[in-house]
Structure formats: C-alpha cells, structure tokens
Image (tube, rainbow, N blue to C red; front, side, top):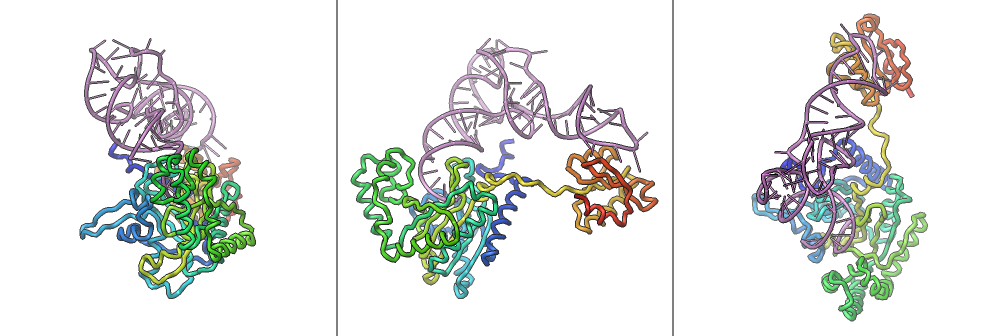
Length: 414
RNA sequence: GCGGGAGUAGCUCAGUUGGUCAGAGCACCUGGUUGUGGUCCAGGGGGUCGUGGGUUCAAGUCCCAUCUCUCGCCCCA
C-alpha cells in the first residue's frame, strides 16, 4: 500500500471533487468573461530563471519551495509555483504587448515544496486574472471588483473580508523600509527569532508576524502611510474611492504586506476565518516592474490568484450530478432494443443509464441507487407494441408510453 | 525547515493492566422476490491493525525508526 500512496501533498480528485473544482473554475471564468477577459494557458513548467528573476531571491518560494530539476538537455526547469510570472513571460514571448490592455484569465495546477496542511498542498490549483498595461487606478478597482464578484458568485460574500493596503512606489517603499529597519533594530532584543531573521531579509514581513511580543512592537511601528510620496498616496486614495463607487466593502489594513518582490502599490487579500492558518483565499496586487524585469518594455500590471482547494472547502454542497433516466430491459433478450432506446434518449439530450447485466429486480435496485428520476422498462410485450413502461421513481406510478414519444414525455418530468 | 497530535474493513469508529482483539455500524454482494427499486429478514466477501525493526513465551496494545494525515510556526492561494 505504501508505494501506492500519492506523493506527499498531492491528492486524487475523484468525480465529486472534480465537479466542485469545475464549478469554481467555471464561476471564475464566467465572471472574468463579463469583464472582457480571455483565457490563457501557459506551460506547467518554465526555465527556472523566469521564477527566480520575478519572485525575488528573498522570497521563501524561490529560497526553498520550488520544484526545480534538470531536463535531459541540462536546462534548469521549475514547476510553476504561481502563474503571474508565466503569464507575463508568455505575453512578452508572443509579442502581445502591442495590444495592451491585456485582460487574461488562467486556471491550473501550481507546485510548491511546502509542508502540507489543510488547505496547503504541494500540487494545488489556482484560478487567477492579470490586467496588463494599465497604469491607472481604474485597473486596480476593476481587478479587485472582479475578485469580489467571483467570490459573491460562489456564495461566499459573507464568509470573506477584503483587506487592502498600498506598498507605494519603489521610492516610497525604499524610504519605508529604512524607517522600519531603524525602528525594529532599536528593539532588536525584543524581537522574535523569526522576525530578527526577517529584519534584513524582508523587514516588511515583520508587520504580519503572529508572535505576541512582536505584535506589541508592531503596534508602535511606523506606517507605510507616512512614507508615501504624494503620487502614491493619491493613487491609493483613487483605488479606495473606486471600490466605494463599486460598492465593494473593504478594510484598509496598513500592515498588510506581500512576500513577492514584484508587488508595488496596491496589495489586497480576501481572507476567511474558516480555514485555520491558511486564511487567504484570493490575493494579489500590482506589479509594475515585473514585465521589465522579465525582459519586456516597462509595462504596469495587476492581478490576483485564488486557491481552488481552499474555495472548495468553503462553498456549499452542490446538488450532485443530474438525475439520470434508467433504461431497464426486463431480461437480456431485450438488452439490444434497450440499447437502441438509450441511444435515442441520449441523442435527445437526456442523461441515461443502461446497465450491463442482471434481471429486472437488480436493475431496478441500481436505478434507485443512482438516483434515477424514472425507469424506462422494456419487456417483450411492450416492445412488440412499440411501448415502454415508464416508472416514476419518486411516486412509484407507472404508465405505458409509446417509445417514439419517450423523449418529450421524460423531458416533461419535474 | 521547526514543534505538538493521530494512523484498526471503502467510510465512521470500538478494542480495558500486552494473553479468542481482529470487531460494530454504514456501504457493498447474494438470496427471500426467474416482470419491478426504496423497507424488512437471512447469508456473504473484505483488514499483513500505515510500514520496517526491536522487547517478550505472546504485540493492534510497549520501544525505536520511517511514511502519511492533522494542528501551530515559517510562508502562502
């Protein structure tokens, strides 16, 4: 058995799981399409350089979470840990920057070598959008609103809250970074070991430390708000005003930061308290430097990604697969004509189950188990007269129906 | 990567100080009903007790290792 286990942190998606994932992905795309987004699919792996350059050396993803390997030609490849870098690379590769703004939707598996937990897998799935080529705050408003609409479409509006912040432009961020280092360095001995480590590697991350002692220091720490350039401040205010105009509720969290280097200005996440430590279900931000970083012309961008498995744990149970019509030959002698009837019903668009063996009782039992809406019973006598016995599996009522009118009769069942 | 908890049938679990401890319910299969499901009755299949070592006359039960899941940290969707 041990060797038959899936690889740690990976999971089989059985039909019920797949149906749920599909529902989430379709809801995401349906909403994105209403905003004029088209789907893009990039490879599941890229040259390692694509991720190393875009995510930044200090991010944990690059430092310890990538599935990196050499192919037979000696190239270093990496299974994508996220898809923004891949989409941007594809946009540059295909020369699409001549057609900005680009509005793209994607979905698919991502891979991170992390310690698995509930809602955290090594292969997981994301849906996401990227809006590339629009520097105006209108882009931020659209992308965040799109995310809110998507979550609302899944019935999660009341289960998530939107937190939003700005990281400012690179100048503002550099100033803030220095102020933070100065502040925390003065309290170096009071910091948790984790945060001491973060101090020079990625000081902004100290702000969302969960350590009790850190939190007391953080409460007194300087805010990014006070380090913003006038332009950055105006930009952020425009984003918030736009959200208000769209009726999207949010909470400004001045301590919300991002781990990936490419983010600037707007950072946001929709969180839930229903998933333990993995509280983010949809998160993103602006990345004005990323396209240039990957070798394209300086081009702004903003986007988000949402975890399908995490959403799947939050959405309500669905109604299951559609109830089928069971076609039931009385005995094997009627199997062949039953097959013909089943085909006619399927051609008419009905969901039809036809068993492969067994007598009437066994097949009726199966019809019941699979939740059939009705059973179309075909015996020697019926067939000779061109009729079928239709049994309503809810009421138990039966009636004779001409085989030719089965499609309309069955389609009319409530 | 760090620190806790847990792994017994497809599922949910019981198993008392090591000595009929390999069980229950649900599910599944067969029959009662060779032209009728859901209820009921009877019977049946199914587990090297996560895996590998060790202690012992004897290990599901104790010890060690390992794998997986899980909770928290790190980080993130």
